[in-house]
Length: 390
Image (cartoon, rainbow, N blue to C red; front, side):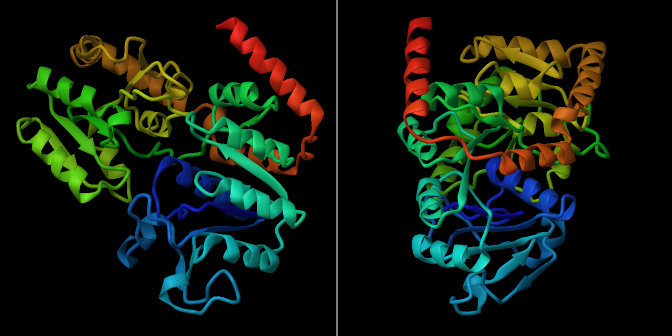
C-alpha cells in the first residue's frame, strides 16, 4: 500500500510534538516492518509556530539516515530549501502547499492520503477530487466539529488516538473512528532517578504551567524541571524567565532531541493539563522508564496514565497537587509501588509500536465509510442523545 502523510505543519523531524512524532513512528514501522511504501510532506511556508531544519549533529538521534538535494515533487528545483530527508521513508516540505500537494499526489500515486493538524481538510479535498481514499487522524479534543463533519462527508475514514476522542468524534459526526493509541518512544533501557527532578514537559499554559509554578513555590525543598517541547517564541520565553527568576528550585531547559537525557534525571512526571488532552504520550514514555505520573483526570490522560500513576479530579486545585506529590515523594514504599505499576502499564500490548502499526494499517485498508443521508442521520441522532444525557 502506498501511504502519503500530509499536513500544512511540517512533519517530523522539523517538529517534535506528540502528533508528528506519532506519525513518524507509524510511518517508519509501516515502511520498515510491514513493507508499505510511505512518504511525508508538510508546508514550507508554515508560520504559526517556529520550526527549523534539523542540524546534522542531531541526525543520528532523530533517526535521519541522509539528506538528499532532490525534492519530493519532481517539478521543484533541487536544493537546500526543498531537500528530502530519509527517516526510513522520504520526508520533505512543499512551497505553495495546495498546488504542490496536487503535483505530489500525481507523482507519488498514493492509495491513501492520511491528513491531520492544519491543512488536513484541504489535503483531503484534493485527495477526493483525485479519486484517492482519505483518512483523518484525530489527535486533539479541540477539533472543529464542522470541519470534521465535512471530512466525514468526503467519505474519509477516521482514526482517533484515544477512546475518549473516538467518543467525541462519534457524537460530532455519527461515524465510528478506529482507535489507535499514538506509538511513542518506549525507553525500557532507561531508568528515572528516584532522587531527581519533578518534571513538566511543555512550558505552556494549557499544559498546566501555572499549576506547576505555584506547586514549585509551595514546595521549595523539591527540585523541579521545566522542559520546553513546543518551541517558545522570544517574547513568551522572556515572560517565562521573569516568572522563574523567583523560583530557584526550578530548572528550565530548552527542547532536546533525545528524551532519554530528560527521563534519566526525572523521578516524577507531572501532567497538570487544563485542556482536554487527546491522549498524553509523555505519560507512557515516562512510565517506560519506571517514572510514576501524576496527571489531571482530563481528556485522554486517564487512558495514558492508567494505574501507573495518580489522577487529580480537582485539577485546578493546587492543594490537591501538593498533597499528591508529597504522598509519592514522602514514602519510598509508595514510590516503588507506583514505579512498578508504571513499568507494567507501559509494557501493555496497547502501547507496543509494532502492534499499533498493524492496527493502523488495518484502519488504512478498511473500506471507506458510506457518505450521505445515513451518516448525517446517525450524526443527528447521536448529537440529540448527547444533549439529553447532559
